Length: 306
Image: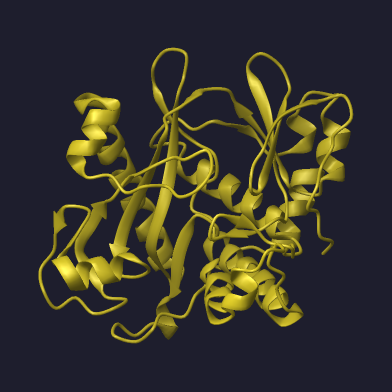
């Protein structure tokens, strides 16, 4: 699959270029989200794209938006080129499954992180404090071990640089007590629904981040991407042993390589990945999609561009 790291769609105004997504204005009510094959780590866009990554991110998000639609509003309009406005259809087909038409909304400036297992940078906080972001946890949870129940650990949503962790009190101060409760309860509910599906498919959903937006009527809707290998940490159930270093089936593979090569990670030039890491990352993303959805990425793309 080809690598697309830059888009410039004729006739459309690009509103934003993020670390991965390019966002285009379609009309007063909708936007076109395009997931490129750019990959970021440690707040930097890397010099290497991952072939087909943007396709997996889009198709995984489409799968989850459709799966979750009976349970809460989402910003998805369609991911099928044939169902988009006529002027957009040829552009969407040319993007090969990377495009998604979505509703506009007012983004809530909070990353709604939910954790079901002990992994990543918060493991050190737990070892030191017995807690994560003010959430007390029992002693003795091994690395990669399940938490007694999923916990909500939100962060700020920084335009650039690092997102900062928020305690429950800090979240209330930022968004108000009513919205803080709504964000927590909705994120935990969606995490529970997704975790059950993942387990049925042989995956363990370790942690993920959700983003929400307000519709004009004030209703909260699930937005951005959802439960992708970029925004989530997955374990293969048949290859996971609590107490051992988890095997990454997500973007952690890239982070781990960069950590092992600080001269590349911290150099002045955008970090470039070796070909084997690029290929393995692309394969793992596609594998996660196949396990989650029950079909190949090629099948999903064929439907999207029909």
